[in-house]
Length: 227
Image 1 (cartoon, rainbow, N blue to C red):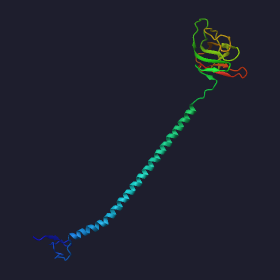
Image 2: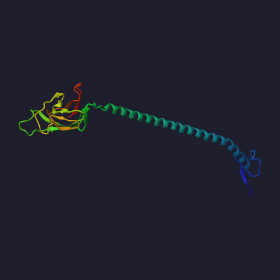
Image 3: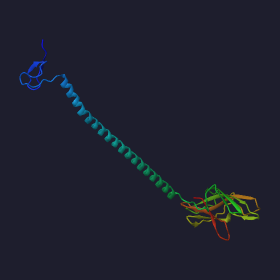
Image 4: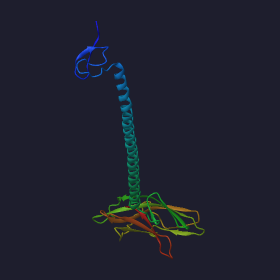
């Protein structure tokens, strides 16, 4: 049985060995023609596909590079902001920090004048056990404990009256209380004396300080903070 094929021009059937269509005369196309056509199409399309791929690749590279640059920029910006915040915090700390004058002493601290060494050991409210010695109405007694050492080369006089107390910047009275009071005495070099100094202050006083004159000639004062 003869093999048939279809004319590409008019659609008529013809013998597969025919070189032209018996109906329209169009030349018959065989497998060789298809192969040549396929090769030509490949030659034309491959460069186009390659160019398209290269174009896509370049675009992605550029986009990635831009993304990297953008990420680095954001990171640097965040770092700068963080550093800036850190500097602001440090500046805030410096502004908040209070400088304590070198003539102010708290409980547990020691004053040294070159002649005496005075340690501020404690401060507290005091209640008298003598019914005849009571503070005025609205007032209370306080006391502070000091240890005084003669660090000079000559004798020195020590007394509770060397100290003055101020409550809210007003002078406080000294009551006649003798319970373990710092007595007036003369200390030889290297000797110590210790005891309480007593004062009567308002019950609602917000600031209580005890002063000690460190120099007779300059009248400089050391301040022991009770409250």
